[in-house]
Length: 164
Image (cartoon, rainbow, N blue to C red):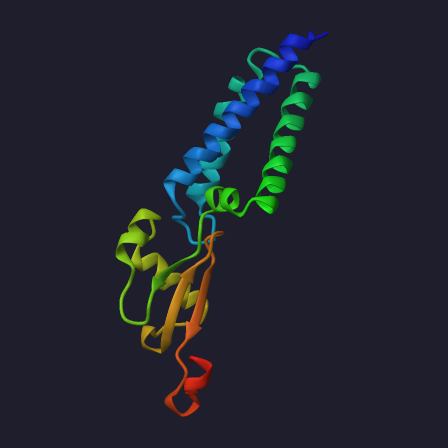
């Protein structure tokens, strides 16, 4: 039987690893624009395998695994709760939406910071059925990496009172 101190150590190591991985994932940016690639899957599998021993140490008991899983779920719930109540915390965890294309030019600095290439963005636009940049007013990358597109209105439909 596993003693309580070892179970607390498992919970502590699990929480520490969770925080470290969350921080690292925030630092690397939104490279994939809302879509996972084979590289993402391999990375996820290898990271989970790499941190397993760090969380459980030499404990291969069912109790140890349940403590680690419960700790991960509790942290996830706590983060969701904090995001709901504190918008600043949510922005730090999830990131902000940003304009990637303003109808004239790409926001190169921000794209680079988020590790997104123009090629990735144009590919995502094609997936939205938008092959021509000339018809676009704004392209926004949402916090979850998805792409939102605002089209230009044809001159005949322009209404200055609506701002659009």
